[in-house]
Length: 186
Figure 1 (tube, rainbow, N blue to C red):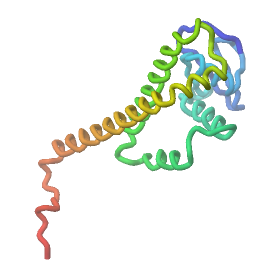
Figure 2 (spheres, rainbow, N blue to C red):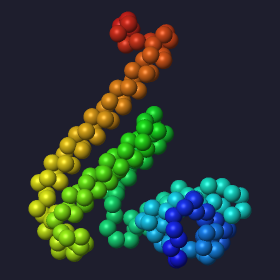
Figure 3 (cartoon, one colour):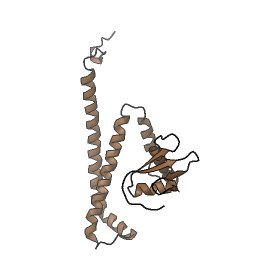
Figure 4 (cartoon, rainbow, N blue to C red):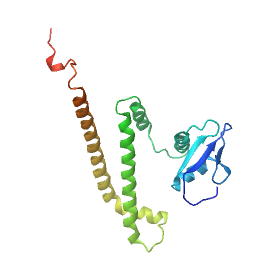
């Protein structure tokens, strides 16, 4: 796939024969090419060529499914089960935002680690062996950062739940619902 310079959002059309057409390069592309666009931080949108319906999320989910089935999966069955349980749950909307913020925080940690490692070498990229040695030396620091991150994440989620409860109480506090403390026992 030809690389193009970043600019406006790239339009990819999906045809009924399941082929993807990149309108910027005027070529058919594969899911691997779309994955490369993601890896290159390219802005793009996938639409159904016939109806114009937005299909970007569907294509991204296909890429994730391919990645999960080939090689080392990122998500355990338990984690996927937990995510599924949030669909239809009152917290569904918040869970997406929560996960998105957590992934961004993790990316920020990675970027900080990469930035800190620049001083350890003279502008040359680390070899896999060098990264292994570096990560072994950084393990205690990484554990500390991840522990702090997880604790902050947990606190953020608890705060979000408390805010929702307070908002619900203020919205519905004046309704005459049966309250457990006012119920008479027979």
